[in-house]
Image (tube, rainbow, N blue to C red):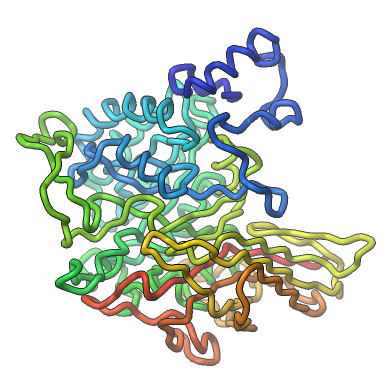
Length: 539
């Protein structure tokens, strides 16, 4: 409503009314910055009551990986996915239909009016238009564009020229890897030239097929660190492991691959499986994610639904559907019986990405993701979370939260304060999840990797575990000692139902998530949360 890059037609009636009032009073367009005190106070959608602040931010839950009938393997209308997201407690969503020749030619244009209509009709849910990019030489990725007049034009140009399917650039060759970097640079240029207000890129299901090599991930991040900001810590398709006859009986997240001709050869066999529903790159303490964080550079994790076709839903594609001709499938219709062979959940039903936003707006959500103010959970394991790394000097206290960097004098005493609101209400599986343990993971900052394909961080391990014995709000204050060397820390927590020694051994991770069993991985019996890191650097 306050962002002049968002056209009038993309606003809800309430937002449009408030924008008109601001125009009449001269406040909109009077040179005030969107982040100023005057405008910031009014930035929320009138239909969305403010969320209680925590750590100075409104924590907004969302999902950046959602498919519709405009994907060749999708089914639902945009409004179907957005309504479900809102009903399941999400504040923001990104529609990310698959890139490819048909979508580039037809779908990217056709889906936009449906997204604009959903922005008007979906109450307080922010609806981004995005894309699931077929990354040249690699896997898939989410591209998120801030709403504006050029959102379709930029996505269309990007998809036409830099998508791995449209360019037949899937093979892991140096030329295709360079094309991926060129695509990210194109997005940066579009933002730099003010064609679009903002854009982000996150790698999707990065370990599923072994296609995203460590040097490619580092290459994306280092090329444009304000745009290439992270990866899915946990993939979608979390219902796929529900055992037969009550479910698909497959692999959680559809992580059932083995090394192929295009896979990076250095990955171990276990990397092709999920651990507690999380990608191996994230779930392995001292693994690839930690090797990136140990460089002292941001690389964030998220969680989402990757919703295509929902477990136990009754909808089917409408008759005479013809995706290649129309760029979309026919509207879904009632199919008569629940589909127990599909592996997805609706947005917000199981996976949530919580971002610490300054207000309820598109720009604030993107800023929060870029800053790493993000934690994720499954099955509504937590009701709320606040993490503060701070100095113990009460007279000149310094504090940082998720994604931040705490700078302090060498030798300063540090402490970590964790406040957790435990679940009070039943989740969508109709039980109240119980948090059993919180793990503190800590590692040294060693600087840029000399080997761009390294995927281990030998100095990272679980340094403390906190058993949870009470209900309600949990507050943990943990003394970290003197800040003598640069380090980072992150948190992980579990319901305690399934755990095992981590891939790098008991000395590193004595009770981490267990590898998910293909055909027997009920997601509701194995719940975890993860936070993004905080760094501490001495001067």
